[in-house]
Length: 198
Image 1 (cartoon, rainbow, N blue to C red):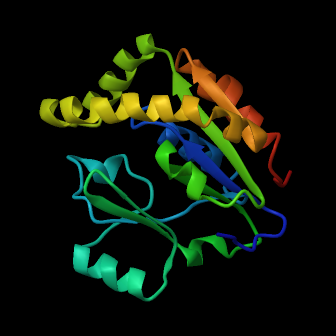
Image 2 (cartoon, rainbow, N blue to C red; image 1 turned 135 degrees about the vertical axis):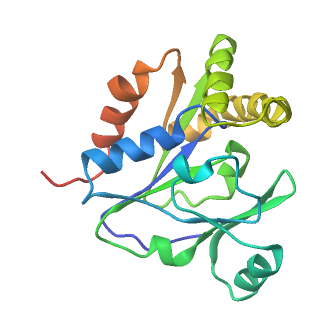
């Protein structure tokens, strides 16, 4: 699987739900709006409660609409997770004028091209899982959703560890201990490893 981006990069943020992928993406776009865009993700999963206030560029479609797009060859990335389909469209990876941000579950990492791609793995200690639960509550996930999602969070953390060698060959794994690390370590590291304007 390849894509044709000459100067700017695709930045893959891989980590479990609630670890801060959305925050990092929003902050990069806020700091350098001319240099970063978030790729649209097309999904068949239903919106979460209050999702319009926390999601970045998600397009919610029916299974039939998704299948039509897939049959038309629209997707650069096409995966299934927890019974729902997720796809990134090829049209979001054609610009040579900015870096493209992509959030993925770590289990999808091996299916991605390494060409002109910077991988950022986001992991954390078991102690930080409490913070992830708090973030899920803040975005108004129900108790049942949080309970069902936590096993996937733990699985994603295991996958980050499993793929850490791969990630570190083409980027870096960050083990998050507190909220300050996104601003103090991760975002500056990304900015230092991709092309940006002044």
